[in-house]
Image 1: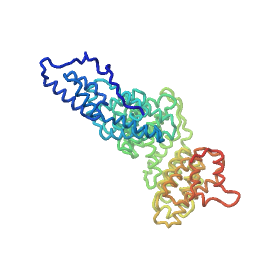
Image 2 (image 1 turned 90 degrees about the vertical axis):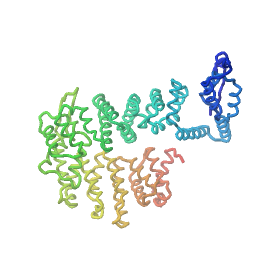
Image 3 (image 1 turned 135 degrees about the vertical axis):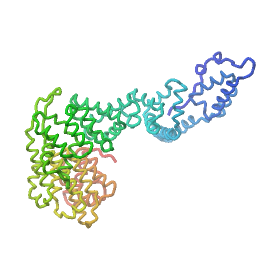
Image 4 (image 1 turned 135 degrees about the horizontal axis):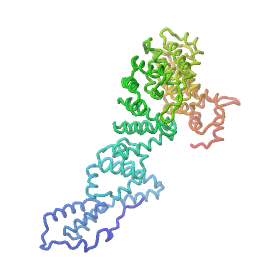
Length: 584
């Protein structure tokens, strides 16, 4: 670790001629000089003041006020406690005993960060610029180190109005570190900084794929939704980017997710995207769509307006205007949520409008529509209507659904129907008495869930989320054996989901269950056994990293190992040991 030393050269203090023996000619000090001397003497009396960056200026003031150096030398030497040098000495001793230098440095830095967080005074910090009237050299050196940049971000969240911290954040941004400014307050205090952080964060999300989107989107959305001005600026930027370049669809997806976040946070921001896009050219559409999005509910009057504009018109508006996730979610809740009611006279309008949004294909070039393809519209509408009538009819029971299972399977091939079925299954199996009333090994709703997993990879995360919710639900009115049977049925759905390609998320969840010790071990053993029976080499390193520790757990592997030649547990472990570098 670098030592803290001071070279008191003559260049630092100036020449004696510059200071001069500035004793007053009549031997009497003025009141102002006496006050300056008293202030300086108080500073010289503080511990380790010789280590302070301001010591040179204080010495200059003291000597210019007409005093000799003897008193200064005595005070500075008597109050020199050498804290920094003592720390360096202790660090050298620790290094000699075998402690890694990096570990020592991290310990000291973390302790200093804690002290600064406890004792930071924003008024004193702001006075630095008032007194020095320039950027201190130590500040520019400080922001070159990640540890101290992180300290600035933490302080900014606690003291958002501190001018010194605002300036430091701007310096950090100017130095090219805007990608690491993730704190909402630090990023949103200044327009220039926000613009840089917005661009950097958006590029990170777009370059990382779906997994990166899920990881970074919450913080990004929180930053964008910090205020009305940040939200509007971000949505305007994303609206422009969505219309230009090859990644317009991905940018539009991010903008829609941010809008969803704002809506879930209690803010009605639904009309802003409408005003920024092509919807502004269709005032009736804006009024009808905006009203339903604001109220978060569909109504026959506004649906009729949109139906006439899109389905019956010869020159409909762009279909992208009704492909708003929040709007499509309202259709799913209205058409497929158990217990939802729609006016029968208007139901066909709901169905055809949803089918139009899901199936129509348009080709645009320079804001001019070159073609519109509605070939799949009728088939999609028919599939939606069929599943709606079968699943949501009051007099439809399990036996009727079982008789129409092949019809339901055919309709599920349509993605929009699959989303609707997932909505219906969620509402149906989440009822407290569902598993009490259905004794079939695989109830129809869960069989439909398997079909969704088979044909729609994009819905795999939603299927897994539903299965996790059901698996972690307690069923107090079922005895222990029936509860175990229900949960094995749900695990079978997870195994099927894994077989459809959603491997790592499923295995990662089972691994977490084992680590948390909140799941019956017999269920984990059942899952592992089912997986071992269906997998063969080669395996990816990510799969081995997640699955192998489960097998190596004594409480799992000991009961799974089979006597005889074929032992899948031993075979899997041996294959991993032969083909992968395993770390303890």
